[in-house]
Length: 213
Length: 241
Image (tube, rainbow over all chains, first blue to last red; front, side, top):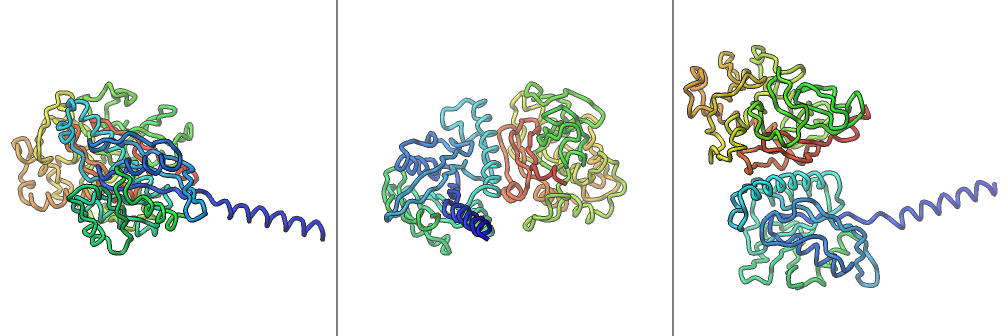
């Protein structure tokens, strides 16, 4: 009897520990190219770990491979939330090397970059299917949010019933229109921010803890 | 042999089902695709040195599509039926020459539809042949496995969308049937693209992506080559059956 009791106790201890120390949620940062995903990922990573995730650039498709930062502890209201951040390449339905030629790039480099960017989109979509527990969807609030890509991706995320936060980025720019973003996705919470300037990051972290904690 | 195990180098014909459960020899689950004529055994491996090989007549976009229906369609809710489904619709399919064992002719045609040899040759010369992906008329295709399929106008079935695609300089096509329904064929071509392609190479450096298809597929594209070659990773679970 004592043996069984002990066994029960130890099993219950193990299961308690399993559930208590649940794996960190893997949060994918998704969105179209040049929305500021890497800037946001870097901001979060720097704020809480001191390291950056990857280089930021105004050239589209700077991020061509998903990059991960694991074990980012975000403290809110006395409790700590641990997430893994996955910064993904911008998702788009067309990649054209010509758009890189405007950025002082040689044609060969532009073509290579285009190919890598395309692979990156494939990778991002693969991760969305396989490997994320929640999504931060970053939009440039100076751009029209009603695009095919946005609609499709949000639709996929909804179909997977993943928790999602919409981040209306670039609020530091004059043309920013957060309301337009909120109107585009009324079923989801929209958080305004400037990842570049660090504006409204408190609310950003509150919402991350609330949604993904 | 279009598919090759990246581990042991074993090759498989296009449409082979053997690879679906991993390489029978070594169990590897990474394969690279090398479009080629059905009878040619060109370069054994897909190293990039062969990028502009004119032999790659069936160079195409990335349809990571050995035979997805068996394993992948089960959880596919959003896209139309895959290979097998299309074959069902395609009632006139009997006249097709068998492109490769186990591969639906519609599938092979659809895949060959995308990039023709002029674009592939241009991959070296960098002549973006067209703005519109359509009019790249390149009649100089060697007798690869798929072009003959596409060039069969007689059967009058939808898969002869190929002539329509290349119709601008149609001189070398026997288009008596092809002209008949160009708009239908355009429509069909679009449907085929929608169904089969996850990444379409319009020209070197220009891609169109079918996000839903990329999302739906279990296979994961690792790298692209300009001539339509690609490397995919198939899920481990494919080897479990």
